[in-house]
Length: 157
Ligand SMILES: C/C=C/C(=O)SCCNC(=O)CCNC(=O)[C@H](O)C(C)(C)COP(=O)(O)OP(=O)(O)OC[C@H]1O[C@@H](n2cnc3c(N)ncnc32)[C@H](O)[C@@H]1OP(=O)(O)O
Image (cartoon, rainbow, N blue to C red; front, side, top):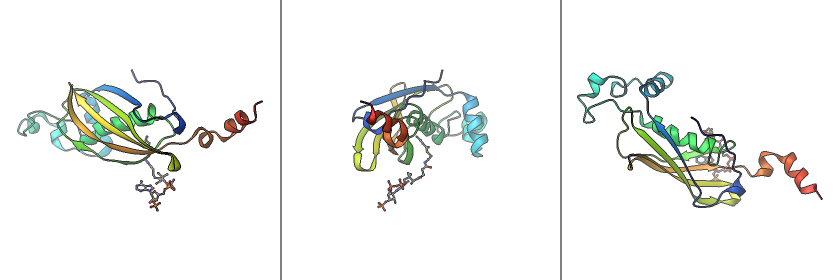
């Protein structure tokens, strides 16, 4: 089941705040990603081909796994309203069909004057890091996201 959407505004964030999403990678996820991106590399789609690679079996696209980081950022931490600025990625180990990936993002730094949040991002399979990196996002304040509500709140006696 997909987690509920949650909006955190810039002022709700603090260093150390963390969120984890868990996803088991299905063959249909990998086939679907190949279809929508056009990346039909047989290492993702053909068991016959993948058997002759060092991985021995089909593996997920690295950017599919990275997309799960975007899912955490865009739905939970900070959530809807956050805008991706940049993302670094280190692919440390392969993700195979049937693997369960835990995707954790953690607020590492806040830059109030620019409403920026830097988050460390780690994907693990059975405790082993398969991907890590850092995301930079722009996060609206409550007043920026909903100026009318913010004005009404300020004027309330
Ligand atoms: C959770 C996931 C969500 C998504 O996936 S959203 C989809 C992916 N993201 C996007 O499509 C965002 C596209 N980029 C933009 O629209 C803009 O970009 C931003 C809104 C992110 C930032 O624009 P602005 O608010 O005008 O920037 P500033 O706060 O005024 O800062 C400007 C300084 O920041 C640098 N900068 C802006 N964006 C980037 C970037 N993406 N990568 C590197 N640098 C960036 C500029 O150059 C400049 O720098 P200098 O102050 O030194 O002149």
